[in-house]
Image 1: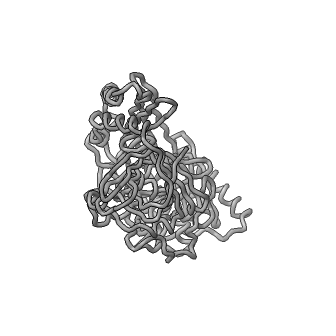
Image 2: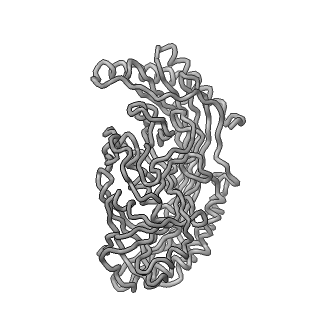
Image 3: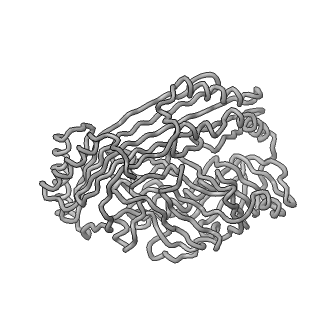
Length: 489
């Protein structure tokens, strides 16, 4: 990680802030200087639907005084502004300590960190001319319009770059630049009052990876567009998904959201401790449930902020904990959390480099990084061939989950019948439901490394006020027994 500085001014300002914290008598504090740049381009048909590019920069100061936190920041990058923020944060902390009856904050130990991290890339998307980007998107949207029943043909490209410096009073002095890029396709078909959609590689913004413009090019949107359109049209006349109990194979795109909602969020330690309960924010995985049978012995889920290409990959989180791998579920048993230094200290656990903020103006909170399902040893073709009577579910369309992350329902864009080991009829509007430990306990097969890939999500929401973070989930298709299936009307 020893590289030339990205921007000496950011690091100099962070260092000046730490000096001011010391003069203010702050026991622990840190200063984070951040510049965030995001671009969103989307075309519908032959028109530009969205074209936004934003640049936001500022700094944040945290101060821990008498066991309580204070926080302040500003969009002004100057030593004078940082000095004022240090005074404000220290004052807020002292006031909070006097008014708060809770136990003083403790922090899990992390050795001082030094260095620079950059996301590897071939071509920075912010260096690619907009005309070149739009040309690709228009060609992809045109390739979707294979039939007059395709009423909406959408192609999207998104890019996000974060440049930051972080220094703290323990001696941490780091700088990093993280970069994600991606996009996708969406087709909406209508006929005789029926409306269906199909997306690629998955729904919402598509698929993002840590890296450059080369990732979007690797998705080959133009070549995949005709298949996406054909499937959207086929869904118009497809029969409704049957209801009942089925053996279900779930594709990688849908598995990524299954992991996100029923493993990533419930293992966030602030939720497990009851500190964060907005937006379905609590968790059934409270500390006394460490050791719970979460899934079948095949299920191994882990957080890894070092995964190549993972949108949740970085050098350090936003309090300077180095990236690493941490088990969440081992051989089907719940063993660990995503945590910060503070939340981890409260239960005597090692911190997992999962403390992140989406802006200089927000306090970091516990957030997912890359949360993965370890591959098994099945080939996808063999898994289908081994399924005598079941369904293959593909790509998310809707979801709902309770505040404890126990009861869930997912609607998918499409399902295929599996009969005697062969893929058969296409079904529309499939829905499956479950209870998290029972669902994962029914996992009897996971595809291997050849079918394993990271799926990236640009918009994961959490917190109040809301913070939006990018995350990744590595998975391969998997099979589950006795799943309740129905149809969305």
